[in-house]
Image (cartoon, rainbow, N blue to C red; front, side, top):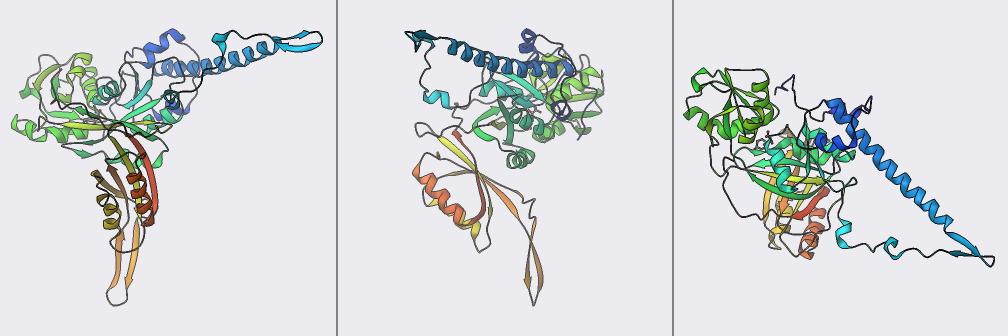
Length: 406
Ligand SMILES: O=C(O)C(=O)C[C@]1(C(=O)O)C=C[C@@H](O)C=C1
């Protein structure tokens, strides 16, 4: 897959996560703009902004510590005895409530949400659906979005895991296992693709179409129907493709991306709604450093990953643990077991069978707060060599509305 460069828009990259900022060139007031949707400055500025953010957190902690010292000075001597000055009632610590227990942003009140791509990507729209009014932080790779949360540069990551036409986004399944973040929610986003080109360009001028591989797959039939039997090229994200066409003034190349990307990068819409099925939906998961507390007052989903143990009919036994408790499975995915990819079984008469080993990802419709889910997992554990709960989270129950062009 191409990584289009030079790219004028700013994204977090693995390099920028690793290196400290050389100079603090932005003011905290510019921070909101730079960490948010409007990106008009350089990557170094962004790093500086994050460094300032970190130093502000430290400064706040120091202030708190200082006020602790000041509190000690409130101890006055009366008749030789030390007494405490009365603390104004407003300053008394408030009891924790349930709401305090879910992870909260550590900086101001705006949640910073990492996504892969540049502004105009569907992942940015998913971040906005999951967390309205958040500051969406673009990252150049999925891996970077995971790390941004782990390193406290972002509070959440919103990442695509599957699309109704294109199928699973395997990379994110692998990363879920490799990283220690928790799934705290899901959003389903209707995806409405447009064919974008520079103003004045006509379909007949096109020699190639570029986009994210999932987007190319979702529009394959329609592109052919439109007579576009031209080269397809996969790039990192849909909006990045639009940006590339615009930045390089490419008159022979179209991008598949959103209508918002057309607006942002000054492209015209050559064809609207080019996904092969109008009910084209991508499912995203929200990730956080801490899990949420599972509840039973609304529909919950739980995601697990396991590797099966030796024995016969193991997969059947695992899945029946859910069936016997009337728990519906909504998704099953298998990925190579990278620590132990092959199991050899010798049969003296026939030879050696080479079985591939898998990690199985299962989503089921129940909350970990329910006894039936806990019992099912206790049973699953008996047949598995590895089991991890990736998260138990509210299901996206927004009423169905097919994708629109806006
Ligand atoms: O490229 C984008 O705009 C993305 O947000 C990525 C992505 C994906 O990974 O599947 C998300 C939704 C669409 O299905 C197409 C692409």
